Image 1: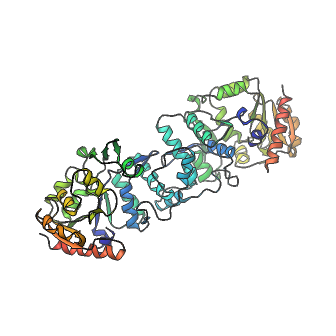
Image 2: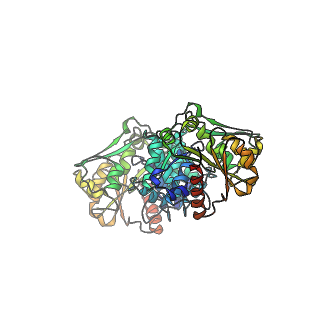
Image 3: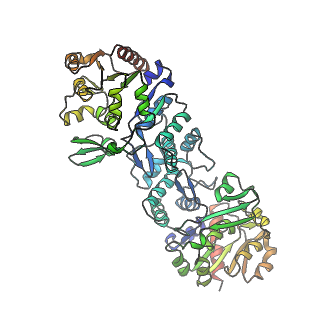
Length: 296
Length: 296
């Protein structure tokens, strides 16, 4: 995403973001994925932690501890401003898209950022200890529970946010970023019209594998795939996108998976996919786009 | 209040607090008077500013400025925790009294703190520029507007919070603190049953003048009294409490007002009322209580 924003005019890029992880915290509407995408594009994200604003303080949370409030979801003081503003606007009747637009323009982000939907969709995780809200599973319990099932509650009644379907229809290239296909891309594809829109668009559709050498780049994807009986490999992920994705970028470490993935009807590019620097991000974005252009 | 808490077992003291200044800020229910009373009793108040928590940061507000939100009401990061907690509890159906109790016990405050009412009462200020919410008049416009009238919207339909009337009925001494009789004590007395309860209790009722040498100790009281055609003096304030207050503590500077105040049927103690140190607070509390005990 940041790589793409470096090689294209940012105004030409739209990021469609999962909101299945959204949570209510002390009356605030928190949209962690929208926020980290916006903060990253604004250049203020805390890259080390992977969420929140760089250099943020936690005095509000510290005081909340005095009140014995739950504080496992670590919201920083500046980050709270985003949630307070969002909540106030939602309470005034604005949509999540409208607030997202307000926040990204305030932060001078030129890439368009769209929530997948303005409706409430909640990713729920079924575990041996019961069904959990996403953040309870992910942050509070540090994704230690075996995952028996993942559902996107509310998805079937939701509609894509304004701009989502036109962005898909008018795109030249759609990149399924190396996110968790079950927890991050899955909820987006579950919104009626999105999967269908992607399968009908004339855009080149390319994905980047989130599994490298049998491990997730980050997060619990490898564990979840194993729990769900899926092959923990680029091939296992590619199967989830069958019929949707035309080209797949995998790491050179997984070069041996090329024939199996090709058998799914996809072209494969094996290259270095580890984005450990801005340069690496830009290089991967360039290679991915160049590869996408070769797709039919 | 802090003086009294030093000379009596704190558990024996109840503070009944004005909530007419409460405001909604970005969906948060802010109760500035409850908060400063609780913070002061907890020993964490920012004494220099007269509101908020000592040493608090303003990173949330700073970020809100990036979003072009109104930030004239200067809420600190720790202070936000109090408002977030209060709002979340109110949204869950708890009363303002219940949240206030939760906050004061969390902060280990042993003095009982009660909001005057659990209902919404809003102090409104009529000025040549229109009718204003209290905080708009007070904080945003720095009490520069001439005051034509003060009303307590919602007061006539409100009831005292649980514990308010019993505290008044069972008190040995009631101190009308040196607060603004129109903006701070006025709303409390406007709650049906409070003024009547005070006039019927067997407690000794004593006040401390907020006007010294023709000036308000702090805030706009002198200006407001002048605007409303009241005498800007301890006598002018005493007139507002006629029939309610039995004894009045005024500053020695205003000794000449003693005969006029006595003519209202009150006993008067003229002493040093400037509370510029903890010692001075304790001394004034001791003198006030000793004086109250001489009242019938």
